[in-house]
Length: 465
Image (cartoon, one colour):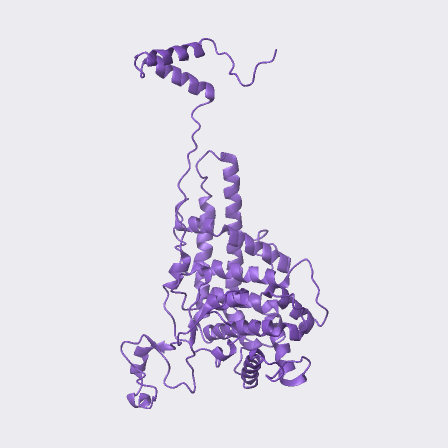
């Protein structure tokens, strides 16, 4: 007869000895006798030892959002009429925010007058130049940032840089970084500026869309839309808008990329090709790091302590980041910072216009979210075809590249990449922390361009200038 699986197999007199030991203990015998200890050791041996798994405590994550918020603002003038162009954005009291509202919150905040320059800079001016300010004294030693002389030339809107991107705290991030250029590049590639251009042409010239000038509807929404379009049209006509040439020059000089419209222009600039090469080399080596780590864990088993990665891989990543960060400096030259700010203002304002005119364009009312109405607007106004739905959502795939690429680069502004101590060093902690972002960028970029960044450290970059 087969043995009962619920009963342990006989092991000689072991069970009898164990029971005798227990009885001895219960009858007043010593519980720490040699027989008890021998019995315990014997039972542990039969059970295969003590089932204990040793693991190192996971290091605390790096709060890169907080570290980014500690950077102070820099001197920059907002684009003309920025507040007027962003008038279709409503944050306060909005309980149904979409991606467009969240993009605004990632960069800006209403209700705070933008300070253009540190107040100490006004000490460099002739005092009589400031004597005719009719709104009160312009200069005060207690003011950190202030407007610049008068509002008729460079305005200080009731709007400023104060964003919550990359997990920043309530104090917000008060400046832009080179990662924001990458975000702008992918969002432009989505087609937002091409859609906006078609809308402005229809409003200002060709009349191909029935855009109200404020007299068609009883409510006031179309009046606001008409004024926003009027402001944008005036900016375009005077050459003060964010232009294709401005943005293409920005991409070439800051990150070594170009846009499709920019390729059609003859632009002679420096090209920061090292940034593009090193950024995607970082993605490749990070993917190799994750591959090596997963392999080491699989070999050593889940019960073993966390397997340290190859020190050589960490050193390679450290050196790549070290050279890459030196390429960030180009962003601080010339009009690159201003062109980035202007491009972001026009991009978010353009999205808000597309949202407000979705039904006017001919988009079904059921298309209520940006991932639906922006690809539909691109089909109708740019590709001039009926709305189609393919396997890949144009909006989502560009958004994934934009958000993940930007966040990786923002982190590089603040982490200590030279700390290569295995497991607990800041570089490895950060790499572990952002694995989902690295993998997400790789997947989205491969879907978007057909290039797998995990195959070669020197891939062919589609947007390379």
